[in-house]
Amino acid sequence: MARIVFDLDGTLIDSAPDIHRVANMVLEQEGCDGITLAQTHNFIGNGTASLVAKMRAARGIEDREQARLLAGFMARYDDAVGLTMPYPGVLAALETLMGQGHKLGICTNKPISPCRAVLAHLKMDHYFETIWGGDSLAVRKPDPAPLQAAFAALGTGRQIYVGDSDVDAETGQRADVPFLLFTQGYRNSPVEELPHTVAFDDFADLPGLVQDLLIAA
Image (tube, rainbow, N blue to C red):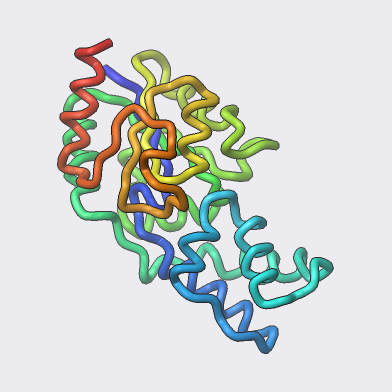
């Protein structure tokens, strides 16, 4: 059996609409125009502080306002769940993987509180034996430490990482683990430019891909 750790935003769930809404609420309070959903996709991946810095820079707001705007974003983040949905096939794939005896976890740069809030809202939290957020350790992805901690918490078994982004690809490479790249998420680079073991665009294929990796090991 395998230990399978997933990224969250852009991998298991399409959370960009909620993140977009919160970002624009913060910007509206500053008297600024909002950012687009496409910009939101590009800004996701390196943690909330990075996202706020990018949205702030996109609207010409000074660096000295970073802490205040980040606090405003975080105050709304736990409630940013109403527009978020799992990607098609995710729940069925998780059910299948659990039924096959695999151990599942999450390693995300999303802060742990909104991470747990959205998983509970979507009734997905029971699938995962361990959850690591962007503030669970002193470092975050692409540093491999959070991913390695997630694997360690799952015990023993073949390690597999599933993600969608440039950050996830680098994390998997630095952790030296097989990386399955979900191509329908928030990556900024072409698939062929990202280090990965295999790419997939349909979660219905994931259990079979995991089985193939285990057979090939």
